View 1 (cartoon, rainbow, N blue to C red):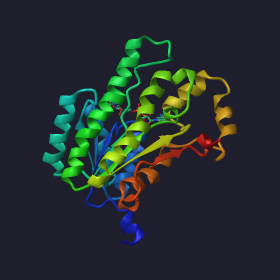
View 2 (spheres, protein in one colour):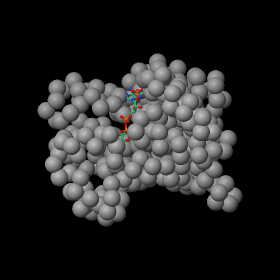
View 3 (cartoon, helix red, strand yellow):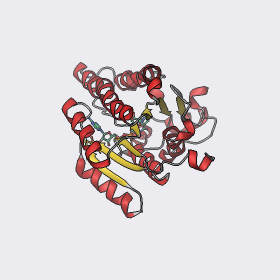
Length: 255
Ligand SMILES: NC(=O)c1ccc[n+]([C@@H]2O[C@H](COP(=O)([O-])OP(=O)(O)OC[C@H]3O[C@@H](n4cnc5c(N)ncnc54)[C@H](OP(=O)(O)O)[C@@H]3O)[C@@H](O)[C@H]2O)c1
């Protein structure tokens, strides 16, 4: 195969949870621009359907289904619908996140809720979607983590604990599922310019400049910086890449 064919997602069905969110939309756009059929899924079907319709107006093959990652029955329902409506699954971008918590001082119930959706729910949906990939004789899983998967910050303790699970699950499941021709890899975003970090910059004086000073690339990231890495990991170009933790951070985590 030449490299254009290796990077093509033609005839592939790819699921992106949280596909209507900040990063989700860019990831969906990249996968669809590489000719994939992309299914976005999250709790709010109306928003997902609007985002999918916007993409279809631009000529991209994007559809929406519903799932609550914290609800096993809802995950089973999604699995059934993917098979009914698309006949198979070739790739899964595990991107949804719940942020019910603030600092480490927040009520312990907030911590439990974060782990229920982001860690336990993630394992649940990964196992179910992996079954579809096995039926497909293989496929790709891309877990979206965070710099907080490996770095500590007082304002992100509960979030960081649940995102830490992304790294360990990626490595363990990559080893467990490689024999089924499933590649499991993770992408860890660094400081990216989104609504979320805009809020943080407004609250924390000097954050913008501190990030710039520590980032070798000399700029904040953009959600569009994920398109290429995710398309690569979803495509046959990365067939021998298993268990990789790919940082997309302008070099911030390497310092
Ligand atoms: N923003 C950043 O700066 C940043 C930095 C580092 C890492 N990340 C990571 O990047 C990924 C995307 O982040 P983002 O900022 O783009 O998030 P976002 O805009 O807040 O979107 C989160 C998405 O997850 C969905 N979601 C939440 N709870 C769900 C549940 N129980 N079941 C199914 N879907 C659910 C939401 O849709 P519904 O409300 O419709 O369910 C939404 O589409 C996350 O994994 C996050 O940890 C983000």
